[in-house]
Image 1: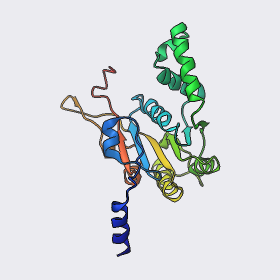
Image 2: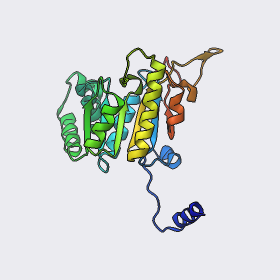
Image 3: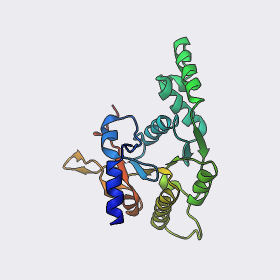
Image 4: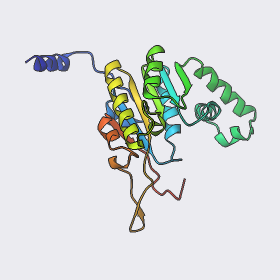
Length: 233
């Protein structure tokens, strides 16, 4: 009866719930993401999950306190990707320092905007789930990105296999997200795409690498893939 009463009161409330989007209309209309959820962004290596996660983190940072925990990519590479995206300039030109006056104008405008964001980059190589959650609580992050799950360090004895470690990490992030109301994005490696009768098959929920627990702990699973892995266009 109490559950029914609470449900009816929420449905009759004039205040509409606020869901957390990414700026992509088709996703925002179907995902209904809230603080305390766990969102998986899965892709095979070199497909673009870090770039997508950085775009999403930047989209949220004007409103939420965001921590981006990178276990793989150093700060310089993250900065290059961030500001190439914000300035809408060629990452290749930035890498080669081919920066003309128009590009500099865009870059300066982008950095000025970004300085007002609530965005922290945390070099997280070697960090465990406990380390990441403790840092998130200490800095009062509302949203965290973990890039990526399979690199999070295990805790306790070191002789355990990768399946056990990744399973425990996934479950621990799920518990922490619910307990503390932190929206948690877990980037994850997927298995390499398979060919059936000469045709590449898109990934599914079984494609998360090293543990079947991952798909059980996610509120939303987003799987990125190239329609033709041999054609990056």
